[in-house]
Amino acid sequence: MSIKLYYTTVTASREVKSQQAEVMRILESKSIRYELIDISVGGAIRDEMRSKSGNPTAIPPQIFNEDQYCGNYEMFTEAVEADTVEQFLKIA
Image (cartoon, rainbow, N blue to C red; front, side, top):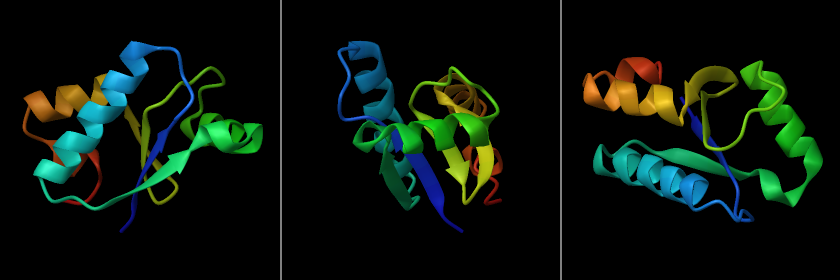
């Protein structure tokens, strides 16, 4: 099992930075290990994230379990509120 969090280190958007930080904080608080994949290192990685998520305009953060798409920030926060994060991440 490998949770992958696609994120970016290069963004002018405070909203994106805040969302990424919140996802990381929640995963860490639940002791869920994850791998960070920085899409700002190259367009190919961004394109891979968008292809895997099935959304040609997807922006970070996007969350996967291995290559299986879990969802975006909004879907993640809904899972947090419903206390179904493990199911959302496909680790339950």
